[in-house]
Amino acid sequence: MAITHADLEPSRRSTELGSKTGVSLMVLTILSGLFCFILCLIAEATRSEVAWVGTGNKGNGGNYECVYSGSGKTPLLCAASAFVGLAVAMVVEHAYMLIAVTKSPPSALVDWDSGSAIAKSLTWQAGFFFVSTWICFSVGEILLLVGLSVESGHLKNWNRQRPSCLVIREGLFSAAGVFSLATVFFAAGLFLTALRAQTISQELENVRREVLEASALYASPPHRMATIARENPITSENHTQQPLFEFPLQAFSKHSNLV
Image 1 (cartoon, rainbow, N blue to C red):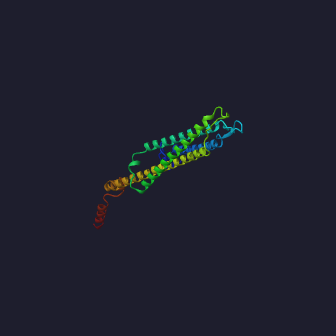
Image 2 (image 1 turned 30 degrees about the vertical axis):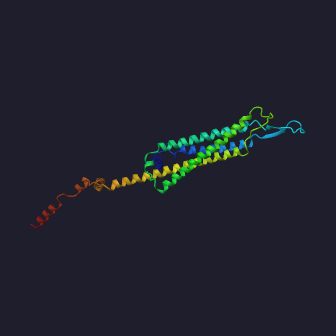
Image 3 (image 1 turned 180 degrees about the vertical axis):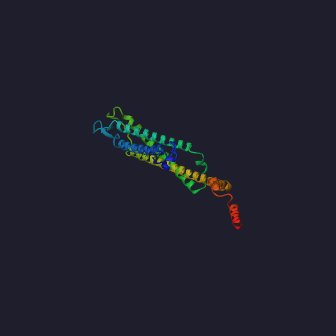
């Protein structure tokens, strides 16, 4: 079986951002965000509403009481699942990125020139994605927490008439789903920025190693000449093939003819 150049390359560790583990984790994070978005839409469609019912005699200016349209179990379960799923996805994704950066070689952080344009660009991109990710995550979780607290307040006796009913405003769960979706996409942008920084760092390290090897090679020419001489030595067979006393024998034969 033929061995290719890819077979000789060292395999990526699971703690590297560009490994299969990192890519799979990033894909699962995006899918988790999409799933949370769908759960939020379901919670929005099934959220509890209030109907007002008049009590007492109409002539005496009777009072009005409210009745919930449902127990709120479905939106409660959907919102709780979205809340937990988004939190788990964010914790796992950021923990993996922290481990990957910690396990990276020290040269990946030392070789960077902080004054270069590409370093400034990557720093601004990483800061923007990091702050945006946590802002969207915090707002989305707060909205889901508000929806959970309201929907859990009338699980029992929800069809009983009450003097006051607390319901969430229309669009709260939908907004939470949008923020959840934005969270995972900003997290993906942060992951790609970190991966790009790691790739550029590895390229700089390879260039630096090649420059050092080339300078060490050209700094010692005698050693290079000795190496070339050892690669093409003169064998003893070439010496034995040439006659050692060719010129004296020819001179002796010419002298004997003259005599």
